[in-house]
Length: 412
Image 1 (cartoon, rainbow, N blue to C red):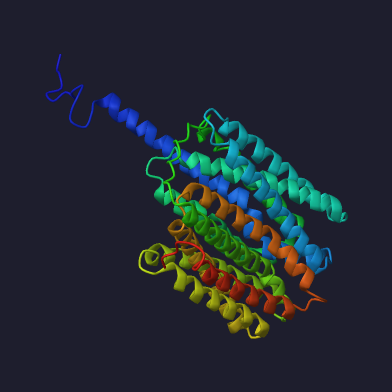
Image 2: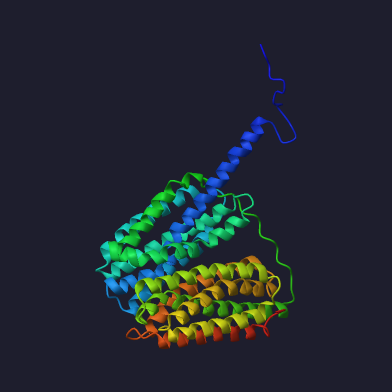
């Protein structure tokens, strides 16, 4: 009998066949988990990514006024924020059933989106359904974030994951006018339900249970006076961040509505909004490169001023180039400014984990409250007052950041 002259050894520098097969199997599982996490992110954030077009569709088909539209946008974000905050306190515990939670959230979110069109003639039931959908979306987001911790070398995955709302908007927002014209307002909600069903096909890659979270670092001791000063400074910066997100989310969800009211066709307006969402990714890349080179305090002041100017550009939304340019610049600045707030907070805080959690809560709260506030300012489809108030809010946020510099151990 002939034997292989160079048989494969049982062990080698790179490991034997069993070890190689084991690594290959683990690699496939990691890839599957990464795809499952991204799919969950896309499904869970589709309503937010498409919200400017969904609000315009509701105004077009259901004839809702801007106050009702703002409340609908806010109630979804409120549900998502509450669910996310609640999940932060329980989902990281060892043994939490992540896979089961993902299955329940995806199934519930699919059913809710299928049911939403049946409530179009009843605003109260529609509000309730959208709130519950927001809760499912927030929980699904928290599940995906928790699952990321089990992915080896997850830095790129995190960057892609947090970019999924912008990628979803960039791809699907230009399609929305065609979808509305062909299949009507229910179609996007059926599409979101379909995305949930597709995500269910990948949920088997989620870890069955959460791993134990690392123990928090001990806080360094500080003098009482310095601690009080730092606390005040942190509070002011958090308030500035809250105002910042109230302003940017409040006007952001109405971009398509502003474009249509300015006389642009639904497709032209949707293209401008989608371009702006895509430009948000540019802001993310700029922040990645420049956060280590720029000082946070002056950078926040400059970006806030630019956001105010970009917002005021919407007063001339009838000029399509100015309309699209203002939206694009606005979106670049949204994602560019946020990391500098976190850097600022880290410089005046010793409890960075808790402050980061508080900052995320402020961001979610501002994002949830903004559309409802703007909706109450708009009168008869005239966004002029809302645009001016939003621009002023960005400047107020900048003033608060300046005020924080004298209240804590802030080093710009």
